Image 1 (tube, helix red, strand yellow):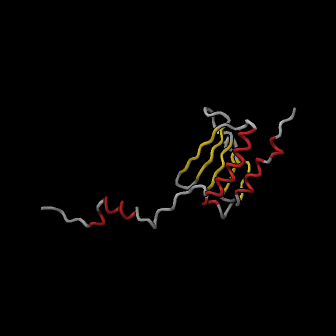
Image 2 (image 1 turned 90 degrees about the vertical axis):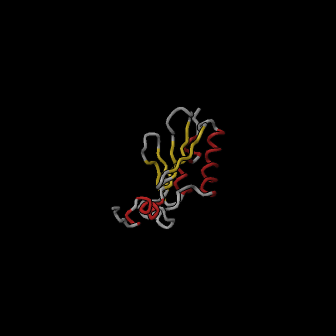
Image 3 (image 1 turned 135 degrees about the vertical axis):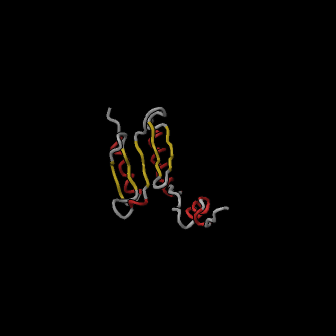
Length: 124
C-alpha cells in the first residue's frame, strides 16, 4: 500500500513557502540619485585620465560600484551600499584596492568626500 504524506512535508511545498514575497528581502541597488552622485565623480576622474572603467555588482546584502584604472586589473576603489549596517556604522563605504575601508558613513555624499579634488591634484 502507499504511504500518506502531508503536503507540508513535500519538498516543493517547502520551497514554495520560503519563496513568498513577504519573506524575501528586496534587492539592494543604488537609486538614481546615488548613481548620479557616483557617476559625477567618476566622470571627473575619467576626464583626468585617472580612471578608465567601472563595474556594478550586486549580491543578497550589498551593492558594489567598482572603479578600475585598467580593465584587466583589480578595482582601485569599491563603493559599497550595505543597508544592514545602516544603524551601526553607516550603509555606505569606500574601500581601497587591498580591501581596507577608506571612509564609512550614513550618507553617500559624506563618503564620496574621499574623492575631493584636493587629494588628487597632480604635482608637476
